[in-house]
Image 1 (cartoon, rainbow, N blue to C red):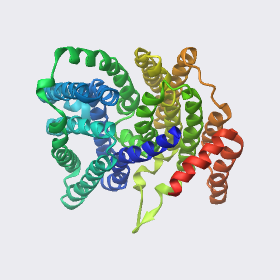
Image 2 (tube, rainbow, N blue to C red; image 1 turned 90 degrees about the vertical axis):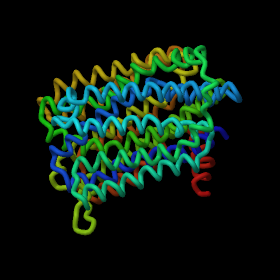
Image 3 (cartoon, one colour; image 1 turned 120 degrees about the horizontal axis):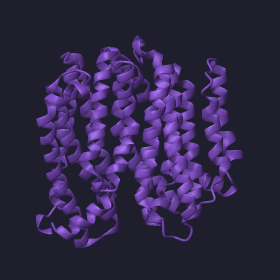
Image 4 (tube, rainbow, N blue to C red; image 1 turned 90 degrees about the horizontal axis):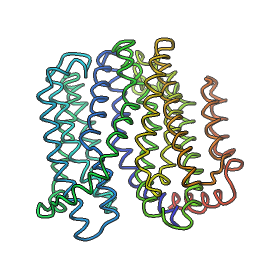
Length: 477
């Protein structure tokens, strides 16, 4: 069944994405025990900057590569992939050169400290990450799961090992963090070169193909920019309004909350190719409705559990040291809000099929503009009053507004009869868990009740049958 195939694709390729993001969670204990809030704040600003600029490096070409490599065959496919990869390499070199020339002028704004040498490290990481993302997309389109996961595992392992070596053993501080990332990204880039050479043919480069690709990809650039404004501007606003130390504290909490974002993006790795292939089928809307209920139920349960047990997780002791450094414990209050925000991002992602099927992708920047505007405006108003908690509230409002805006538009052109009980139950549960429960017995009871109540009362008969017969059967194998 098609929904079962989605489960397999999500598990396989989502696992690769989760492993790539897992390194940020695994390194959090190391950073919170090693760095001060100010030092971790500088690292967080560096990653915020890279997350924003990588959108400019890609300018929608990653989406174009995925679309044309899936929906074309033979020589036509080779033409598209060759044009996209060659163009990406040329523009990545140009962007890196521009940043190199500006490094002395922008270092203090980007990092909160005047370190042009760190800017040079960031430029190298950006170029390498933009490069090795291309063969990873090709592996997804070719459904080469083992190779895909292998590259992700290499990146995670090398990054972890080198961070421990540079930061702990050599005491290199922030320099060590950046050098570890350069080496890890460089290694994966070298290992992926055979894929680039196999699929890239200079003779296939045609201006007509390039223009067609750019017409498709460039509308995703403003959408990507506003997405990264949503994802990253809160840290710069906190730095402006509260200081670098508060950035470090907030970033630690948001990093733990990013378990929710990782779940959404892991799902989306399988979701996008699925609805691109299945969108024209007559039963597509019915499938999308069922997938929505199941995805939001599982996603909601993940966010619910993390929110419920976050205090215990942070203070969990390993070899005499807590998982998160004591200096960062005050970030606990924002984690459940960040998770709620990313749940609403999941409700946005699950509605994307209507945008692609009805070819209204020009609306995507509009949805993202709404989210980014709400985040910036609400943060400016709320952060001075509630501090980093106000920034987390801004995240929730931003993703909710973005999800609501796509719903209001898509339902006019591609209406799906959603199971609203299945949607509202996890939302209500995530609102309830904003109340702190410190008694372990209550936490255990709530942890067990959620899946039973969701399965028995929030899902419909057909959804329950599919969940039992397809997903559970698959995971038992």
